[in-house]
Length: 142
Image (cartoon, rainbow, N blue to C red; front, side, top):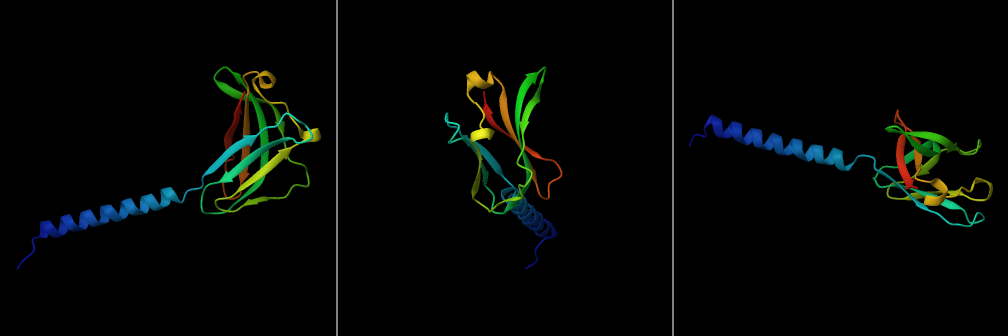
């Protein structure tokens, strides 16, 4: 029984296409995913928390971060104030599927809400080891 060349070619094309789709799915699902949320409190002694979640399997190291207060100028959001970590802050390591809190209390406390921010936005700029550009995530719409 002879198998035609067309059937072998179609089988090879179908198999290689399905393997390529599986590989693309693996790469897509293994990408680095970061979520940023908040836990704001009205009391300066308790402070405001910004929560960074690593949603991927791989651990990541945050080498530096900035909290940006931005306002709309034309079509762009421009920074008018920023908060940086203390000088003695070392790298923040976040394991896969875990989270880290950054607390802003006492002297680092900031007012929030629509009345305090007046339509402005709060962003977190994360410098991650191994990435060239920082990752900018929206924390709060004022």
